[in-house]
Image 1: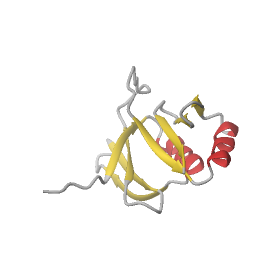
Image 2: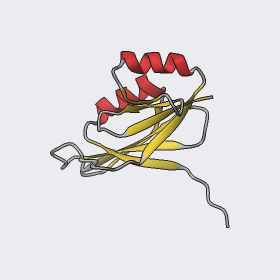
Image 3: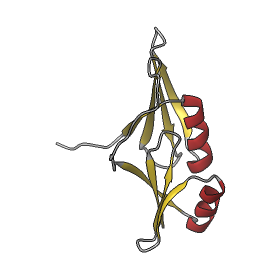
Image 4: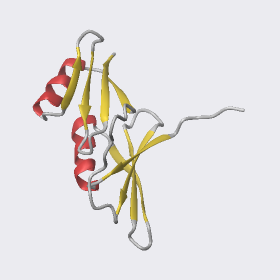
Length: 121
């Protein structure tokens, strides 16, 4: 038996704001969208155009306040082909939330507070 990882899901409070962030910060583009017939939820699947792995963003209509991630240390990770240019872009966006110079990586935070690790080649 073999399993293949296909996507990770994260819930977002403002779908349009999240879509803009993921496009600007990581170059991710929507490839599929699912809307509930009653409008209660929307799913948008994002891809980087290079791997088969997707990020699924879920928006829930009845959610009235931002998500509380608490001490959740789950994160996504992306490898940057030009690490210094990526760091400069993310600094310009004021998206860097933690820089671990000792390990040679840094983290950015999306509009909902999810951390994304940026790793050099």
